[in-house]
Image 1 (cartoon, rainbow, N blue to C red):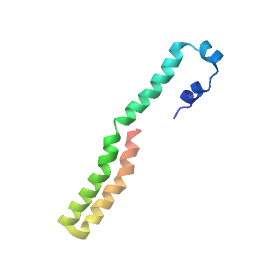
Image 2: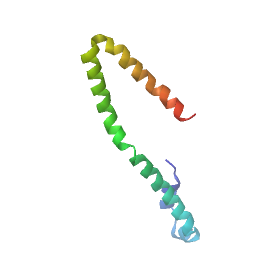
Image 3: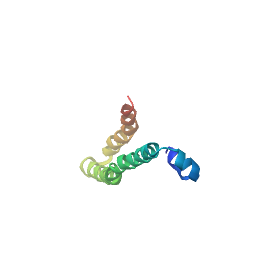
Image 4: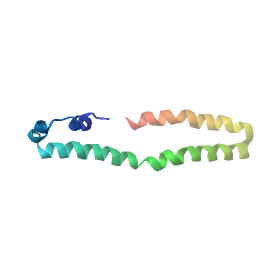
Length: 87
């Protein structure tokens, strides 16, 4: 997290009056934008473990011990898909 928002809390009254309102508004709106973007992904953070457990259970029911290979492949591909995000 950017330390700019915490630095604005430590400014003296003279520094705050010397800093423009537009600059303070820009810093605060950038931090709020980060929180807003993170909150959009919280349902996925809750649903993903549940979906993984359901998928693993269904694989086990339908294919038995062979499902461990499929589930292992799925788990191994998670970091690989994360690498494609930054490409």
